Length: 450
Ligand code: F0G
Image (cartoon, rainbow, N blue to C red):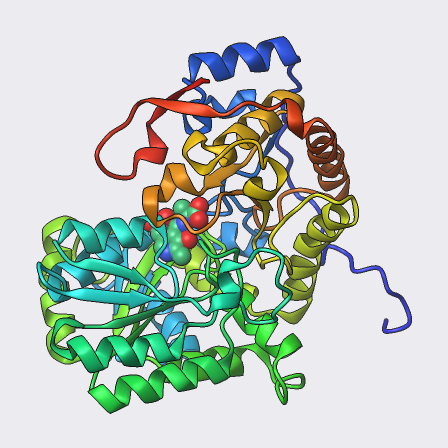
């Protein structure tokens, strides 16, 4: 069908969920009751929910068939073997340890390798990764390439790690670094990909200092698609091949199957190191469950095994990446400042640039996210000063796109709403924090207008 240029959803809709249209007055009231925190809204009060792409996607008919096939045996279930084989097929690690979601894998990994005095470098830690590192007393260090911190820069691999910064860290403090992490794609940095060339360079530095490299692989398939599209010499390679090369450069991974597992729950920790795997399995039994199910039901293991086969499909990835770019390109053309180029799973509005009259300490990202909700019932997520405090390099509002869930007309509506809010940006006011917990404050903090 190469002669046609419209990229279509490579599926049709099998079951539908109604969404509820609300009035501006209802949304004002709901937001006030939520303390201006979008996480505290009832989802029925949201029209288009772009809070996250995590666990919010639609499963396929084959995944639902897997749910029915799920074998709930406590130990050694066939669902476990299907899950394990699907993970090994793509990533090749010797040990696969199922967890209920990504942060459980992080918690176990950093409980083993973290601790006071340690430092863990990453291109950019996501919020739960940073929090799990810091919870052990270790330091979480972000070292993206310089282009990764400049929203308007069009660099093709803005998710790359700064290899010189990694080498400098290891030259100075090698004994304090138990593991090097690379997040694919770099979620906090705009859903931007990491090139194979960068991964190879990071691997070489890890080898120089004898350090293990772990991937935070949440969006591995989207990363592989960008590699195929943008990296020299990769254009004809099957996606699973690129994934296998990414994994072969690493010694292990943490994973949230709620993203590129195409499932609603699940994750894993994988590694090649026998001793690390044994320690991790002992912790797993304490908090998650027996090693052949971790924190999951047999039916979840089936859904993930099938999801991993579907997520590396070229037609799916072409549609997925194109539909995110469709939103980003339309907003860019309308003059809305955002992270360029579009990421794989989300578009990130640049609140600092759109609201120059609101300084970072007055939370421009949160102010913009609230305005999008009141204007059109759209729920996005602040990724900036509320989420990361003084570590925030940018103030962004992420519009994350659930997988296989919204249609082009939903996205056309989002484009209209964002453009309308941007047109009256100068009227938006900053916010102050009223209450906040000590860690991961963005989930439960409350706010008031200044
Ligand atoms: N790492 C990255 C890069 C993530 O984006 C997430 C989750 C996790 C780890 C943790 O996985 O949620 O299964 O425990 N990100 C979601 C988001 C929540 O909205 O971006 P989890």
